[in-house]
Image (cartoon, rainbow, N blue to C red; front, side, top):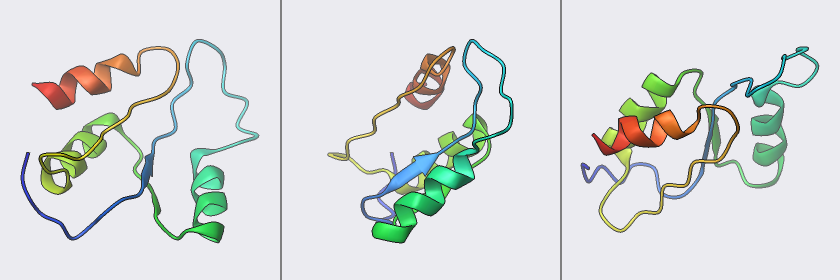
Length: 82
C-alpha cells in the first residue's frame, strides 16, 4: 500500500449484480448521491479493477478496507491482497 493521503475516509461504490438479475431500477450512483447528500465523501468507481487501482494509490497502513456485496465480490479482496 502506498501512503497517498489525499483522500481520508470515505466510501467507494461499484455496481455489481450478485446472483440475480439487475433490473436497472437502482444504480450504485444513486447510493453515492445519497451518501454525498449527507457527507460528501462517497465516490462511484465502475469496475473492480479501477477500485483496486484506487486502493493501491490511496489506502495506507492502518486503514480499514471493507468489502461488502453479493456474488463474487470476494474476488475484489483477493485482487487487492495480491
